[in-house]
Image (cartoon, rainbow, N blue to C red; front, side, top):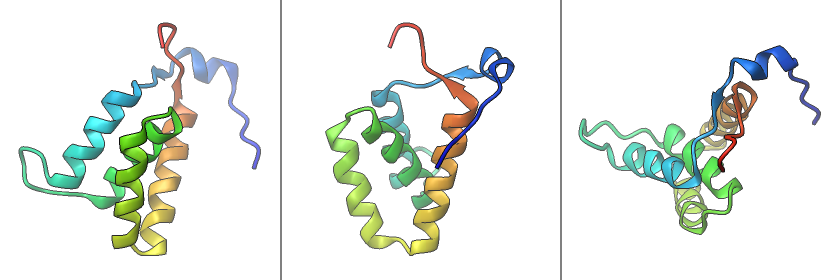
Length: 94
């Protein structure tokens, strides 16, 4: 799969969060955080993105969540992760 992104789009894109920040967002979504509303699709997305940056804990949690999710839910989480990457740029201090 090939993705093309206009250079101007990247100029206005938000920086990509660190793997630790993504991991924490995944934990919050998977447990419900302060609101108690857990969201497995969002959790999988954040764990997937953190795992792509080398976070081993995120990789383990992503695999655990995937066992509880349907193929459609996993596909949606992966679509959301791709969307995140297409609208964010690497931070200069990562």
